[in-house]
Length: 378
Image (cartoon, rainbow, N blue to C red; front, side):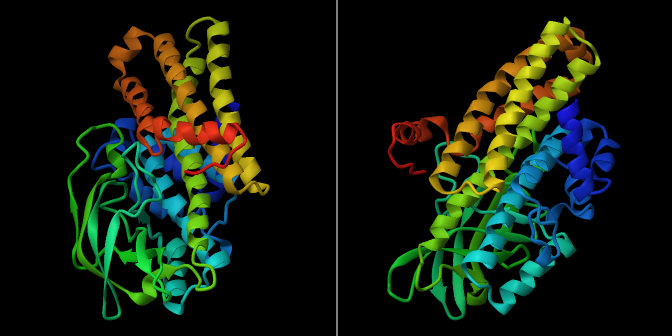
């Protein structure tokens, strides 16, 4: 498929050999709980996609990022979901370092290692609870000498067994006694961090989405990123921009899985040509919508307009993928479904997009308010 080939070319340019290495494994091996895809991703420079070149990364723009994520989703939906969690976290951390809060020497040294050393970033924000705000703090912090003790748990937490750094959002008092958001950088080997099996489904098992628990995990003050004293709310504003990254990338991950199903139909010439055209049109509409928002973000769209555009794309694509799934599986036929467990797997792998926050129920009132000329609050 032309647009999927373009996505694969972008992936090859930024991560040479990655798609080829993934395709050398059978799909179900790529998706298994003991899958090596995250190691393959790491060794092919996957950690550096959204890391600025000044820190040794690729510094990809939004359009390139959604295309790379689609290519990953076409080869391994599990990897695309996990890569999304790393990449949207990287987008936030390096935006903080470059534009909002000048990093301390220790923070800069750590961030400078992410791309060269293939350090994977896990997120302690909401991920699998549909109605939860992705930006809400999920960890509590108690101040002690030289830092804070963190307690809490995150489930599911993608990259749980491969992460190098866990990030979270916590509410901390500033020097004026007011509460504001802060981002701790928690080393994965810190005492008090434990990983517990949580994800029982075979679908997306390769993303390592288990439970991460924090019990009195000490994070030194120099690894806590705060808003600037003159504008402590800037961190909150940045998280909204990060929200846009998450919605675009996670949507692209599932578009990638749908692309593989569609590609199978077209290559096998299943159904009438009008059926194949109709299927391709639905997929390309989803691709065009996602890439259109990514282009707008690349070209400067920001604030609530960017949030509204990302949410509109995500929910429109989510609905379209359901129709694409049904039509593709029907056209591939019953014998293919019986003989090829990969088809049933890919079909199942399209459903979890609906489980990522925010849910349509919680978002609908805010979107309607925005469509009617009011402000958008997520």
